[in-house]
Length: 306
Image (cartoon, one colour):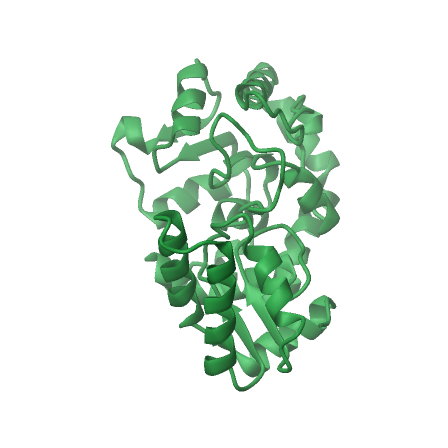
């Protein structure tokens, strides 16, 4: 097992992915969720599948999305640590685990499998992230309806920029149109794929999502303010990314409120209100001051995917 980012990237390019792995994982997840198998049988069936199906070095792809079961990481590490063939797991998470791809390498794999999520094939084409000019103050867009997103939407009384909650507006923007607006925006408020309901758990075994919701604004050279799972900001910082949560007063983003996640969501809305209080010129000044950080964020991704 080698955690070096460059080594893993070359391993992925050379050996490719096993796409059938996600099918067995989904099958076992469903069986466990309906109490047809327990954790022990989940382990045994997955181990049997890997030993029968994997006969050469490979990246085991669970799909572009996230780990479902809280014990999944533990089980896979147990299996792969004894497996004689070198393998890594691909998952759309910012967390770093043994036997999993480094999250930055995972972004390369995310780029390669983006078409599975019905995106245009040119979603990550380099030319779309060149010669970027900012003319809009900020953007916050939310697509899929969830309990958390409903709560935030109801709390937001005003947003000084482009705001769209598709579940309420019924105005789903084609990717090209959304990208045109997003690329022009100085500040991008990001609500990552929900990891929690209101009763947030005390552990972090599920991992935090790291998807195009975060990746694209970074490529678009935006100031990012992010709402994610427990210690999501720390995981981004550990990867080298700068996040402007604290700069806009969202200091509680990584706190694990075991009793009520609403405290974090309220802080996120307070952060938006602070942003609203700043003038366009003040935002532009922050952007200019922090341009080196913005470009460094971008280079962390472009150095891997291009």
